[in-house]
Amino acid sequence: MKINGQAQHIKDTNQEAFLKGGDFLGAGEFTVKVKDVEFNDKENRYFTVVFENGEGKQYKHNQFVPPFQQDFQEKQYIELLTRLGIKLNLPDLSFDTDQLINKYTTIVLKNKFNEDQGKYFVRLSFLKVWNKGDEVVNKPEPKTDAMKREEQLANGNAQQPKQPLSSQDNPFANANGHIDISDSDLPF
Image (cartoon, rainbow, N blue to C red):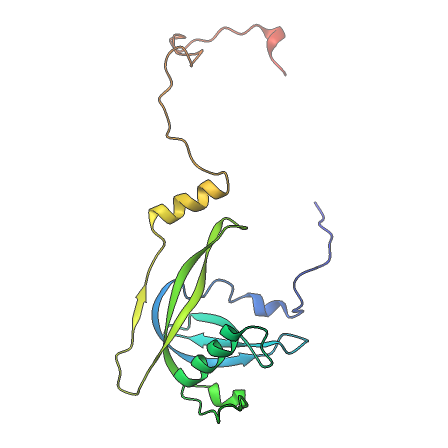
């Protein structure tokens, strides 16, 4: 079968970029360094900080930039930069994103349920200041059984417990290994 189509959502034309696929951090607490800063928003509303732990697993965080629509966005911006050791000359919020590269921090990632999509997504809860010599943390928090059930229920995939077939439900239960079907009833 031949499949035809055009990508509507993916803008990257380098297919090699998709080889790394699912090598991302899940929920938990991890000591990471800033591996890269990406700019993939044409309107320059945000930049993406790429955090990576010692195992090469990544977490990407989109950070809004000034001017801010909401006060919490400004607070988040200042907290992120402060905890990564970037010195701002407040109220001036200017800085060069190259200063972020190779900065260490401990990130706390939490599972947050998305009602619209019916599943949990990993979201940055907060960053901790990390100083040279501090303990390297690698504490993943897998989804609980209750979280998995919630996702199944939200997506209509809740599995019913399997009941054994009674002899009434099974038309072949009393066949004793022999089933009589006439040739005219066979489909072939």
